[in-house]
Amino acid sequence: DRPPAALILEGIRRHYDSARQDAVLANLGNLPLRLSHDPVLRLQEMTSDPVELAFIRSINGTTRLPAIFAGAGIARDKARLLLVALCESGMIEAVEGPARRRSAAPPTPPPSTTASESRSQGSGSGPYEGVQLSLVAMALRTQSPFWALGVEPDASLAEVDRAYETLARRFHADRYRNASEDERRIAREIFERLGQAHRVLRDPAGRRAHAHGAKTEKNEENAAEARPPSPRRKSSDSSVSGAISGSFSTGDSLPPAAVRAIYDAGLEHLRARRHHEAVEAFRQAARLAPGEANFRAALGWALFREAPADARAGRAALAELRRALQIDAKNRPAMQYLAQLYEQTAQPDLAIKELEKILALDPSASEAADELRRLREER
Image (cartoon, rainbow, N blue to C red; front, side, top):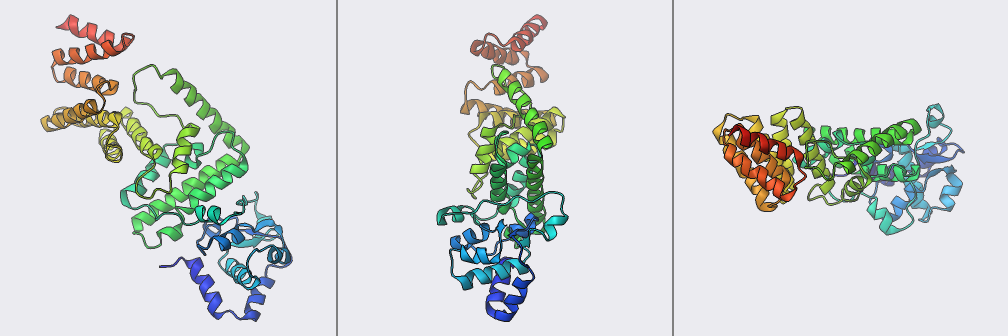
């Protein structure tokens, strides 16, 4: 039940004598040491002890072995065991060793200075399972690098590194070593997508491109605030990013922003007329946030569009749309979808009533006014 790096540490504690430990440390030479460039190695779970975690994260590429021992903050023999285990597990490297052959230096995670901070950056809650894991992956497929890591477009490199380290640890292979093959595969995808987002945001050109896109989407969304919600992608603004980054420790449910991302993915499917995929996405979103009227309304419309000639699908769609209006009697999407459903099922009088309700709430709704005028002329 223990991660590989933790087993390595225990094996060294039991079986490496002083001579063998010296031999391992001698391989590091007299060079500054840092945590591995490779996040798969760097983010292994070796210990959950907050003091030991703080020591490990203090290895930042600026100090050599003597200075590391001098400033360890823990007993020398314990620091020695950890350093040997870090070396044997590939978690540390000499700065002028393997790193010299790489084109870019890896980020150095900030050292933890308190036990509470170390604990917050440790293993945290248990890994996601089943559908929750799939939904996190789906959310990341549709969002920007800023959203993925939960940072603002003007975040510093240190903030980007810190956000990445925190999130990537939660989807490291160590945490899913006892999961099913499918769950390990999805966790690996999430880990890789977080790594990709991290690389993009550390690259000035990549960051500028995505920052411009985020700003454009934000401006478009602000301009559309007064209009009825329509199938469009939600902006990847910093408040959404912060919600997912700050809520990953819940363990019991997805953070609200991740659920919203599932809904946004459903809107994209709906816009592309992938109605079955839209139904699945909206159904998951509505299950995770049963009090969201927009999610219920979208599910109802997708159910109808998936099988417009199926009476059972029509009844299920009506039930979801009415449930949305029970949650929010003034929900515009539900009214719009109802009007469209009634019109497409040859019930113009009911469609007219829904359009009249929309105009009573918002006399400036020009699309609803045009549609109402057309239906009255045809009647």
